[in-house]
Length: 335
Ligand code: ASP
Image (cartoon, rainbow, N blue to C red; front, side, top):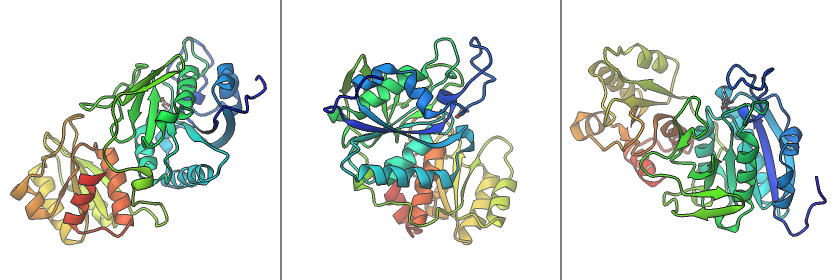
């Protein structure tokens, strides 16, 4: 790399693994590779242009396939980001991550990073060894965004395939395409291309330095149960028997719940289990449903959060001691 330019922003790149750090034996293969095997130094070496954009401080936080992301690693990652951003020597953070659970990690960080400095996640759909690997350009674009003044106070961002998304809204929508991420209905916040960063909207829900949440208390067990034709109450009963503190329903349509699940949830709420209704549809919002369940069971509407993000918010709310359904609803209306 060239001698670093002292006037450039200092960006910490925290690597966690994923396909961006994946390797296959054959360059023509874009599936059937091993994720999370290439170290952060090699990822950076593949992008010499980074030295024109930022002074990089690199750390290997983990080397996992993000399908195996754990709450323990979330806690470590959030703590490290907060530790770095509170200092004067780091101006922004980029996290390289697998695509599978990127949206969950991004939203968790959106709610628990206590800084207005830029935090940007990126990833890749093709392993680093593939023809037309997308990781190097995604990494360059993510660092370009993190080094840009306009990325401050935007919450946690996801830079992927030239688009800049809000951590709250972004979701993986393709199993194979390089434009795998979308923010359904709401759209991306902006774009990054050839060094140019442009934001065209702002995230209005509360996040980062304005968030009331942190990871000081252990996150309670919250599980997700889908509603579908012929669903039985077995999964809910089993989760309740394990002592789960919250359940997110990936409901049909407007977060609607099969009658057999509804009966099980009525029993669960009597035992103090918090219930949030989201939708399995993939876009749109979930409206409160009055007597159908929100008023009768004390369930809460997830609004525009998908089931996986609703689980993150419910865990944080319960960890903060918020258990009353009205108060949980207020949290879902705010974040
Ligand atoms: N399974 C990989 C991961 O999430 C997929 C990817 O990164 O695209 O780590």
